Length: 320
Image (cartoon, rainbow, N blue to C red; front, side, top):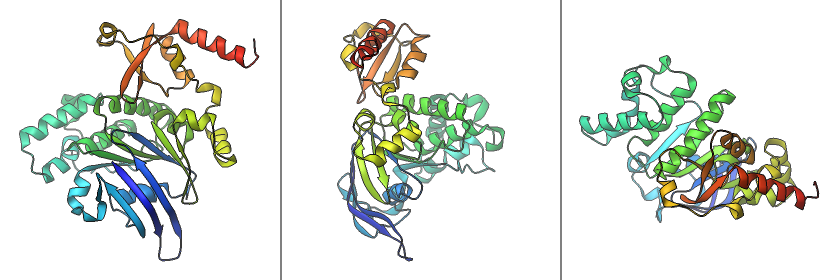
């Protein structure tokens, strides 16, 4: 879907922001780029939609160089969500969401229906919110609008640059959960930049750890938690993220899928990457949970299985 081939970015003052970057981001993947400030992650993101021109190398989207796309065509097919929500304050919520569909000459009825659909998707009642101004919404509500505005014209991919970092912890966690649920429904290709390892591990199908403009390690959350490639990654995880035992391999204890159970609308679905603490919190209120991997439900887990898993894990570590 998105491919970086030996991509570098040098600024006029001689600063090297990105060095010979090679990445291959898959269609429908939630791909998280993480690293300390100044590591090149935002520069990498902005080169995808040509907000920043690359200096060397090639970026391809669907096997076509980004430089060969018409700039408007390219950006209309890429949703973009910033830390600074950047809603137009003089416009209503509906008008904010409608910007790109109007540029693409959608008819008014189609736009109105799309706004209604998207507001429902993020839990904002269209009858209440469509005619409000951004100043009448909380920070979390504004960021939800920022997300659906990026989705308005049904783009192939979404770029998200630290979209939740300015929010309070409760709003941030809620939006992370909402984003996972939304991605389960829409299956877009998402490239998400953050400096928060805990956020990265929660959201990512795969994540890319960067340092000083270079890729240090790419892998699944479990792979990076359990097999950090070097001391930098190990220390970065240790300083910001959950401990390894919070991310346990529960796949071996899953019950086979029962179609009649999965079809029930009330059963909750979690990612295979969900931290143990969050699974325990959900199982305090649910008898069982469906577990999803790579967009497919692969089994059911319940309280008894988690207790069995934890018991086995503790025995293996010599704690019982």
